Length: 551
Image 1: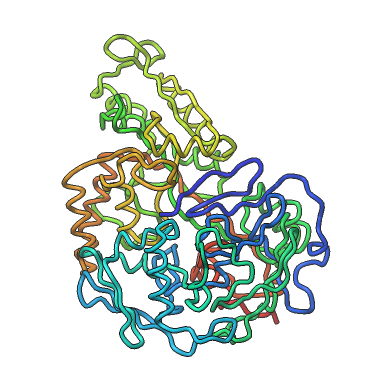
Image 2: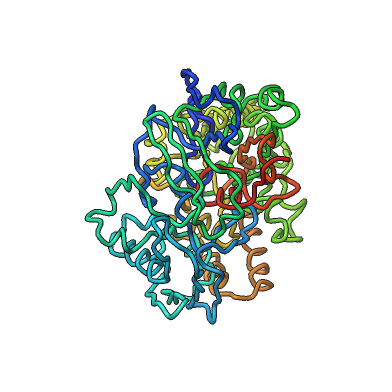
């Protein structure tokens, strides 16, 4: 899963999966910015990477501190469009699943590493065995799904550890490294890979602590699809820089995007903020009164999600339904049995009825339990996530209106994630979904396997929901190769999310894509959603092989 997190006063936004952070603190405008959008040499100015405050030369594709653009150079077997789950073949031409425990990838021929060496299926096998031998490199948990693998001609055969049809969508995403380079790396975990050898559309060009550039890989196996000759990546990308200095592509939440970004170039500056995950309140189900579904229903019915969404994200995103799906991305999976498509309207009277079933009644202007004590809850968010805080302040007001004393806590991000993982909270604001896979989203949200202490990980069943019937449904979903059966199971899981409220969904988290079509066209949009607009992970490969020079 990719975790959604809030926008900070010093960052644009860190979203699904990893932190795509753009510093908004004051900084000088660098020389690259002064040159305008794209220069005559076919370059593109991109706000994708951010120095802290300067760049470290680290292009290790396994490292958590790698440069963002390592994923513009290293390719996976297939790239998953996280908006709809569709896979585009890259280093594999596709795969077959002869049964639910076997995945067979056909590896693309005619591909060369950027040093001229041939790419082969052996490189794929080497990469997967490397992350098995050094588990800290396995940041997507590949070997939780794989029993063994073998090369067979132009194919790599993966034998799975169980009937696990969705495992292919995870195996798809592993970045592949060259055996002839990495077999001699003494410590692949700390290796900074300063001069990366890769198969992708770009290779490293120049590097300084304040700016680096990537140039087109002329030997790329689909070089005819790569229109941008050079990517320019400054270390400082303030909102002021992005708006005023001719950026072609940025990932940033900007206040009043029409009055800032669009106004700076009304003819060419565009934006697209599709939903990339769901922001929700997560009750700790191991604690009273949050372990009472009636209490959770009362909380849900007391909320005006439209107002929460508007207050948190300035009207850029929609209120979320209670299906557990990311809509409209996953509309095709939405159960027809959910009332109003899973949307929950604010209803104070129904909320009070639900609270009464949980043992709480109104006493004057306070909601109290049988002893007369006022209902009091603490909701945790991370310090600096200002949009989430704004949404929670609205939640605080709405729950206060029906007599609940709501306190907000804001630990620093590291402490926030540790509290989530350890279950040291009453309620928390967090995000879920956005993998592109209904199974993966539901599994991470509902499976009791993920309801145990998780340390500082940023994904999992933080509310500790545990239900044997739900686990059985997920196991059936995991083993099914029939889409009709999968959708029937998904409908039951959606009903569980709707009825049991393991999370209280509030609004969809946006992907804050800004782009200019002055120099390049073919950007993803609502009319052509072939990729999310983010500048991080592997989905930029879909964009960088789709753009064309403006006519």
